[in-house]
Length: 396
Image (tube, rainbow, N blue to C red; front, side, top):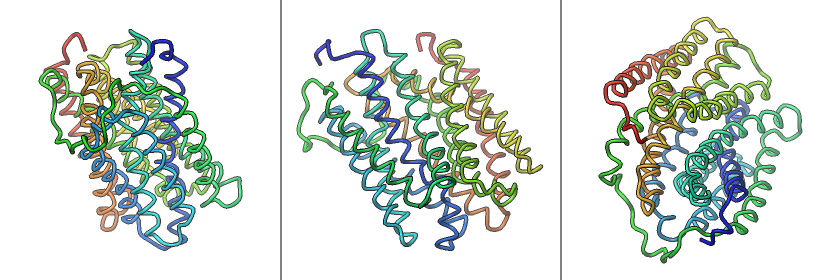
């Protein structure tokens, strides 16, 4: 790529496109209660609709997580924006739960195409020596976009007409603008090859990445599991147990978790990657404890605190994991390795979320949440102990 076209303006524009895509994946979060009223489905259906997205992400990452290393970053990202537009269209046409499944499936395809490719693209666009800052832009775009989705949808659903339609119409317009921006950015893969050369990948790691990948993946799994359950279940808990019927408030509380994640990512530069992973696990443990207290005592203040503290822990763990893994990856396999990390992370989003939905029927939402918290507390404690015993290499 021409050096004159590489720089921070391009990095920030790439990050903005990434954020728009990710916002679409959480846009339905504060609207599930309205869909439940409209279609009459259970809490299990809500969690399955949510998890369909994660399974679609995992499928794309496994089948085409390395595609942008081969055919070029922009082609893959434009395809991702196309899926995001189709997802918005499905929600705009939703007249039955089947449309919700289709919309979430398309949203997952979009995120799967974006996660590894956009992260690698933003790092490619950075000036020489700007890798760590570019990684922050990529992770901040991910979490900031995820936070903007429920915030935007909640505000529009509460204070504007057509609550189940206007959020997706606005997002569709943002996707069109993002495509125009992406077309003006340069391609960073020097010798793109035809699409026919792309082959499905198994989760495989270059030898130089393996020592870093294990503990990083554990931390990413736990952080995404907490984010996934908080995003899918908390609006229902707020409405049913705390009687918070304001969609804007519900969207804001979910958004706080993602915005706090971005704040946690900022701390990584100060504490270093080696410390950020165990510190992130510790903060996640505190966030889980606060969420348990919120479920048991039915206190809104504890829900807010759990969103903030858990979000900070997720940010510490996520950026630390991504920085360590991306830094250890060969440039020509970076997107594939990052995609493998996201396979682990999105497994954390999908499986626990469905588990909570299944348990919500016999145990109630609070009981299912407490079972989830206990399981995640054991896992995050194990991960922290592993990281303290076997910390990342000092050059991470």
